[in-house]
Image (cartoon, rainbow over all chains, first blue to last red; front, side):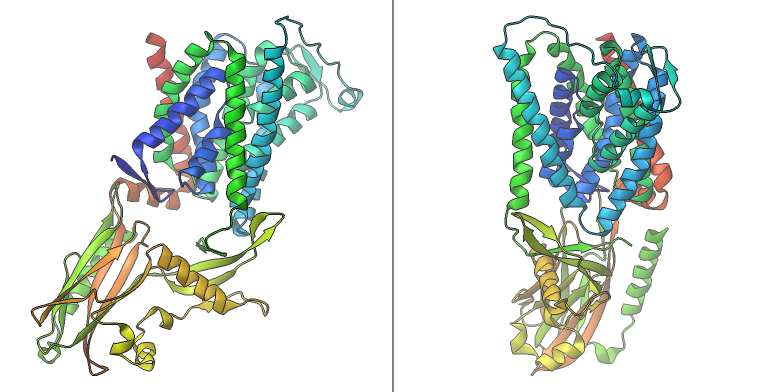
Length: 305
Length: 248
């Protein structure tokens, strides 16, 4: 029992299913320090929330879910606000472009397909990389060889207008972080993800930021972009379901809390293999649904006024 | 702003329907509810239509919901994946349409009379506003009707108008959870020997009510403010949670 009608998604869902979904994704976020948007959106689609509403609402959920993380990193002083501002500026432009692209796809009737296909590619790649990496680290004898920091490529030095990032101890052109922020912004708008899994490696390996301030700075950028996507989606597409988001968040904050508590205690490798398998399964299910012969050869949808 | 108007309209229509001249009393109908509200736990609704036909005969009830524009897209398989084509927009499509009869429709009235009175799924006319020569609009039309039937938005059922003791009859009208919001027309026809002896119409409306309606209207009318509020609500939840869990 306890069903609730979601006013924007226009579907009736069970409150406990939604709460449980928020809780589970929250636990995964807490355990692994990932945003969880890349799992939340597909699961919302599986339970019958329209693709467009699932994406926009996940962006809104990310605002609340990332805030507590940003606060705790900020208290520890591990956020480079200058870098976050530059990345966010790129992200804001990216989110505007992404939402416009989203609107275009929706008018063409291809948005559902593009979301599903992008998720298949995204989850397939992410899951495979994680699986290979975590199996490798289980197999390896535990020895801590710190990764060598990549030296800056020549083309990066050639970019115009250098800027000093004190906290990151970097002196480089803002064009590069602007571009990276832009790409993450577009992805965030179209797929409803924070984009941390892209931003974190980019900050370490391309920008060469110190690892200690990467997670907090990445999360700060994700939050700014999620705020922008939520507002733009609400304004132009009317696809953010506030009721859905609040139920997901109530489960999510509890999940993140306990997830991060236990994440510190248990050995991560086997858990990461498990997460990789979950990600691959979700991707496979999305792909399977795309190839399934539809029960009707026609798609019938009410036209947006 | 739309909903109070709907209620007033329904009430006005209702008052009009009560002042029928005495000569038309061959058929009188009414509903158990003239207004169905979509609230927080809406699963669809049943409304009972009842009436009297003192002279006897057969009854046809048609229920027509508000019109909408619908895009029908054909699916094609490319590299194993199903894609939508450009699509055709059909206009004047009732968002809900049902025909309930006491006996099979084809036994009651001729096809020409059906067309004249607009009775039956076959008679639904919808225009394609952006079709090109290559489009098979008839197939799109048929696909739309199949899809809406599957979703419970289009219904054609015989034997569901039941007479109780010869004069009094009743029929249950079912509305699915995603039935469109707006004003409906419910018309009842008394049929004898293939001829419409009398008809009666009764007003009906579906509206969103309570919190879901407020939220939906607000999101449509003030999208920007809704977005800002959604961000604030999510941020508040996140912030309060950090306060709560810090003490534990």
